[in-house]
Length: 85
Image 1: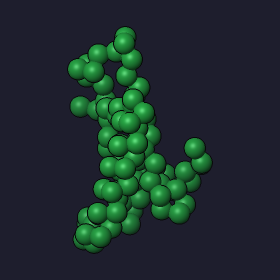
Image 2: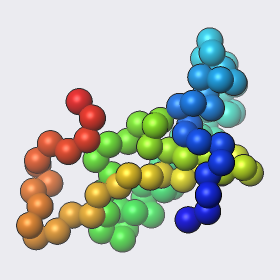
Image 3: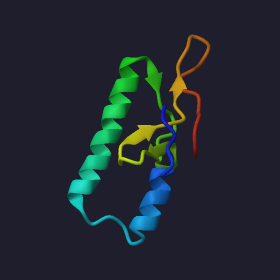
């Protein structure tokens, strides 16, 4: 994974849009990238049990990367609480 010098989605949104995003196209683009990442990892047997803006990293080119995901195994219980409250 490349170095994400722009930090988290949360820090970027707070800095650039302190009053919230008004651009629906930008919101749709963010959601689309997140859904594509989730679908990719689900197809590989991974699940992300703590999706939040702090766990989405921003590349210099604006591409989003989902971080801090969990791989289920026979020893793990998918019903166990893992993640942020």
